[in-house]
Length: 382
Image (cartoon, rainbow, N blue to C red):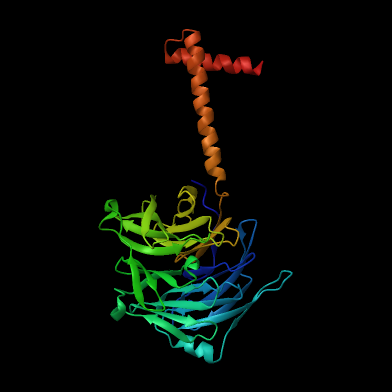
């Protein structure tokens, strides 16, 4: 299960996190526009040997950031603000170490971002040329980047059923397809250029009555899709695959937590899924097998608000409304599974040897078996 790693507190409820490149991470949150006494900030910290530092730099904002997306190039953060609108932060990170510089962008592009409605989801395309903004008003606006000029939009009139909860571009479809999860529990694949729904996803029979909440496309070039679903208070992970004909089938599903999943992401290398729950638990899962790589119970005191992976998929960063940020080391995918299999094989071999030798020595009860094991161990020591 794992002992909870030490949490680092940054003085305000945290709602967003990003790990663009290197060892510098960014967390964001605050108390909102009203005079609550809690500052709205973006904080930079450094991860060294899977340990999170105190803040090394910060930028104060007028409104509370609730979502954050890092541009693929690693030099820009885009934040959605609680009162509406987006802001852009340009990052300057020294090549040979030192604190990064965070600068709030200004100009025409920044003015366009500030006029957008309240956003609950942000997603950059893998090539960095598009930014999708999912609104609580059941709309998705796709912007050209860096101009922030609107390129296309999807609205309730076009088929979106509710406010947008999560989104992701599919690199395997040349970033022309968006997976969109809505507040009503629906999830589907959309052609964002045409504003049309390509395929609605359906939960399997065992999860009927449940709801989708998060979505991430595979990062290995395949047409895989990972989604989060809630059913009867539990959190599930589902792995879907699309064939060349466009049909999507469920490849695997697994119960990931005994509570709803409130934070979700996929690593840039595509090997791990980062999961955080309403109980503050944190998990890492293998994308290849949907097997659990790491679990930390009660990493946070309250619900997890955001989760991101390091660029090499070896470390998980999570944040919470309790003002805490936690980094968790992730065992290399496949290693834990291999060790588990080797252990199982050794146990089977040992059991067979005990049975075989006991049959030769006419062992008749469990007490004799225990005595035999102790005898064999003594012989081994000699």
